[in-house]
Image (cartoon, rainbow, N blue to C red; front, top):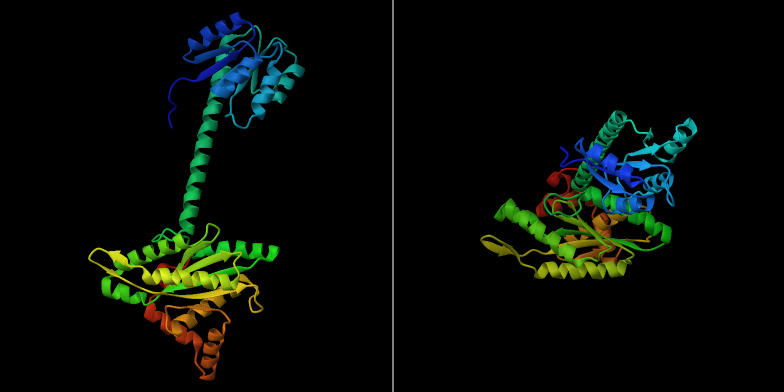
Length: 354
């Protein structure tokens, strides 16, 4: 990126004649020059409009050059400002002291102007390189942030995707374990979604998914998290929520979805939703994977027993259905896959594995 305008140099010296002499010399080289007649004035000017470089006298009353450098380098709100310390003290000890304080270079009085020109150019080159590096680092950071957001977001609905939900669940699980607070999850699914795509086309199906995602976003609290878990299946994470409250919440959302009309160009349609709810603490649930599986199993029972309903894990209805399947030697996983195939494609089959 090309620099706009001239480099600005702040000359700090308690001797007005020295300031004007240096101003004339530097302006003749194409720099924009401002002057300060002491350390306090220089520090105030740095806050208002930081220069590109400072030519700073060491020996000044009240606030000397060493103190100005220390304050400048300690102020993290200021950009990198190269400092050339000008001093009549030519000993190695004084030069080291100035550099240790934060000065970037030094020049002795009386000033040799060709030497000053060379030192100014050298430090301004370093500043330009540092600015370029900072800009590239900032651009890289912004790009990484965008890529991270993309990797965590469902492209269609704009809400968190499965990977993001599972990472957030890890955090919530650890928090719940540490503070012994309840944690509920709701797995919900749009009933007979496959028929939307088959009857109206995938564009209308996409409209329904986006609209449904907005319904969920409007229903949850700020501390809750929702996301698209796969296909037409959505997951809600409800921290600090006991099981009964989560069931009540899920049923309220189910009613909202039931009464909602999905509009698209050329028509409208309605769909219901089914939900499975599970929560920790529960003796069967030892980790977050078990919590997800419990909610998914409850959702399966909701779909199997008529749809448009909320089933909580380990409820009498849940146990009755599972035990009935076992008694009839049914293969739950096969039945579950077949039943959901009737509603639509799930998870990795629909949107790719995260």
